[in-house]
Structures are given as C-alpha cells and as structure tokens.
Length: 187
Image (spheres, rainbow, N blue to C red):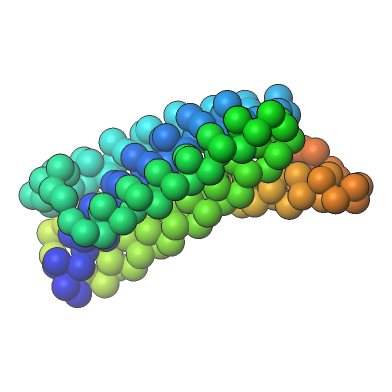
C-alpha cells in the first residue's frame, strides 16, 4: 500500500466529515417531517464525532490534520455546492422541495463518506505497519453509524420523491420504522 495514498484518503475523509457537519446543519433546517429532523439532528451529532475520529487517526499516524491538498480542496467544494443547493431550495419558499433537495444532498454526501470508510477499512486490512490497528478500530467505531446515515436517508429520499409524485409514500420509511422498533426492543 502507498502511504501517500492513505494520507490523502484520510485528509479527504476529514474534509468530507467536516462538510458533512455543514450539510447536516443545513438539512435539519430543511426538514419538514419531525421524524426526519430528529434523525438528521442525531446524524449531525454523530458526524461531529466522526470529525474527531478522523482527526485522531491523522494525529496518531503523524499527519497534520490541517494539511491542505488538492483532493481536500475539491471535497470542500463539493460539500459547499451541496450546502448551496439546500440554501437555494430553502429560499424557494416550498418546504417540501427544500426537504427533498436536502435528502438528495445528504445521500450524495453520505455515499462519498461511506466509500471513504470502506477504503479506510481496506487500507487497515491491507497494511503491514503500526498504524493499521488505528484505522481498523476507527472503522469499527463508526461503521454502523455510516451505514445508517446512508441507508436511512436514501429511504427517506425515495419516499419523499414518491410523495412528490403523488404515489403512496411511507413516511417515515419502513426501513427507518423497523430500525427504530428494533432499537426499542433491544433497550
């Protein structure tokens, strides 16, 4: 494995998480459904923790978390564009459209975040250096949350689209209701 590639992946992952905080802050403002707003508020808190997790990884591996790269600049621009899209939608005056646009933006951001964490896991498994356990532990700490962020928001997005098309929609989506029920039953 190439050390420079891992460093770049981690720096872009940090930028993706930082952008994720901004994306969730804006998405919460766009959420018209109370259940979705609550879920995104929870995801916002978890994403703030993910920022700390990636920063910690970088420090433990001796990489300056403030190091700028072209890839990091691009990740920041992508997050900024998603935030801008939500602001435009929110300013349109149509709360349902703003909510749907926010869901789409979150899905796009979380798809990238999910891929980053999959690659971090691959790097942890394929590395023969002292930092591999650091990557593996971090991935294990956030894996379930990253999965939930992507798959729940994708389900919300699908159902919000159905609603906008006049097709019967399940809000909150069945996947979200099932996960909530399972969580209540395990408590």
